[in-house]
Every structure is written in C-alpha cells, then in structure tokens.
Image (cartoon, rainbow, N blue to C red; front, side, top):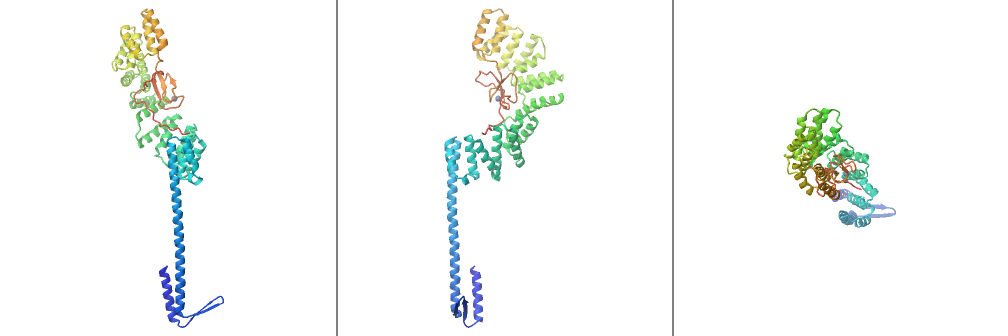
Length: 437
Ligand SMILES: [Zn+2]
C-alpha cells in the first residue's frame, strides 16, 4: 500500500515539476487555486488521513474478531466441560444427573459430535429408544463419527430383535470399512442367530485375522459341527466332523457325533479311538454309552470296556459314576458299592441313588433299600443335564444355540441344583454383551 502511494506521490512530483504555475481545483461551486507546494501538502495530508482511517478500521475489525473468537472459545470450553461432566454422570449411571446436564446444553451444543455422543449415551441410559436413535442417526451423517452412529443403530436393532435391519446396517458399515472389528463381530452374532453357519465361519475367519480371539478353534469346531448336521453327503459329514473334532478334541458332543458317523461308515475301531481320546480329556456319560453299547450287549463285556475307559481318568467323579453304573449292570456289587457309597456323599444325584437302590433291591436288602429311597426322595439332586449359562434353559441334549435365549455355546453339563459349574474345558462365550436399549 505504502509502496503504491509512494509511486503515485513521486509521479505527481514529476508532473508538477513539468507543470509550473498554479493548481486550480473546481469542486461543485468551489474554486480553489493553490500553489504546487500547498497542493502537495494538502494531498499528503489527505492521503495520510485516509491511511490512518483505513488502518483504524482494520484494527477495529481485528479486535472484534479476536473478541468474538475469545467468546466462542469460552463457550466451547464451557460446553466441553459440561459434556465431560455429563459423560462422567453417564459412566456412573446417574440418569438424573446426565439429563440435568443435557438440559443445560442448547440445540447447537447438542449437534456437535461430542454433544451427540453424550445425548445418545444419556438417551440409552434412560431407555429413551427414540432419543438414542435420533442421536445415532445424526452421528452416522457426520463422516468422522459415521461408524459410531451406524454401530449404535445396529446395536439398537439387535436389542430390539430387528435382525434384518441390524444386518443391513452392519453390511453397509462393512462396505465402508471391511475391517471394522465390531461390525464383523455383530455380523457373526447375527449370522449365528440366523443359523447361517457357513457365513458365520467366513466372518469368524476374517475376525480372527484382525484380532486375537479366545477359543477361536472351539467356535470354529461348533460351526463345523452344525454344518455337518445339514451336510448333503455322508462323506461331507465325516469330513466336517473330523475337522471339528481336531479343533476341539475334548468336546463330548462333537466326538460322539463324529464317532457315530464313523460307525455308520463301518470304521468302528477309529470311532472308539475318538471316543476314548475325548474321554481321557473330558469324560462324559454320552461318550461311554456310545463306546460300550456299540461294542457288546453282554453286561460283563460292557463292564470290561468301561474298565478301559475308567483307567484313563480314575480321579474324575464322572468316570467313577459311569464305572459304578456299568458295574451295577454287570451285577458286580463288590466293585459298585464302594464307588457309589463314596460318590453319593459328594454328588448325591438321583441316578446314583437309583443305582444304589437297584443294588440293594437285587441283593434283597429291603431295609437298606427303603432307607435309601427315603433319603433320595428328600435329598437327591437332579441328575446333571445341559443348562444354558445365560438363561438357565435345561435340556437332555446338548445345544450349540440356546433354544430359549439364542445364546451361542452357552450350554454346560451340570445339575440344576449345583452351585459349581461343571462346564467342559474351554467352554466360553465368544460374543460380547451388545445389548443396547
Ligand atoms: Zn439360554
């Protein structure tokens, strides 16, 4: 600016030096005649005044912008403090506190990504489904918080049982970010609930490439087991069950299903090897039943087979219980009695009482039999069965997916009255808690 003025000034000087005499200015009705020196002084004064005025205006604008920025910063800081306070209230599940803080925020403060996260959390905490959905939708529209919004919406739909909608939200998330762990995890959960075992297996493989998963082999084995149940050919069934058994050799129901498939295929020896191997890792009556009853109908021979199994894990109460049961069947009272009498003190199940009563009845010990019947009626615990660890659903048969709560791999073999959980080794829940409502 100054350079331009200097150039103009120098130009004028040159012009005046070439134009001696007086300078006449006509402005409306005014006629001013000046010497070149005075004209120069007047011009310089006007230019200087103009420069000072422009510079003052500029400084004023700068001051105003600074003041407005400071005010804005102060407001942002206050909003940030309020939201932080609100999130702390949400974390401590203080619904009233969170709502009170939310009411202090105006519309524009609630529309920031931070404000929307807080609004969504507060709505979820106070079970305001509509409010949470609104906030999640807005978060999904902001590029930086899009995944957060989609996740919130998908979780809501899962909690509401709207699996088709949840699935489409998860799929649109995976289109944008194919490596989103939560989206893959939710997709897996939805596929399992929808019994899409093949899809779930693919999703699980993707997920396991992204992060460490606990018990991933067992989960794969369960999915393969379910796939085998609907496999089109016996060859395919055998292949899938073989893979499942290799991944989870201690899983009784898988080993049993594999052994039965092998027996159908006339591979009895291999079937017994599979059952015995699983028994040694985690004994279960179903393994012994298939192992023994397929081998012989003769109770003495059956007991001899049971003895082979028992010797693999004599310290296990399940092994002792099944061993004593086959001793009773073979009328080997001398072997059965000490086992059952010791067991009934620790595990007073109905089946153990039943074996004892059967023995005393067969031996003609009426008084002992009656006494046992009375004790059993009063104190016997229900026989162990498969219980869902999430909802308590009970079934004689093992289940991958709970028929009541749709929990995946939640079944454990135990007595409903027992306090200790008798889950088979490695039993777990793969899926995290995702309910958002
Ligand atoms: Zn359940």
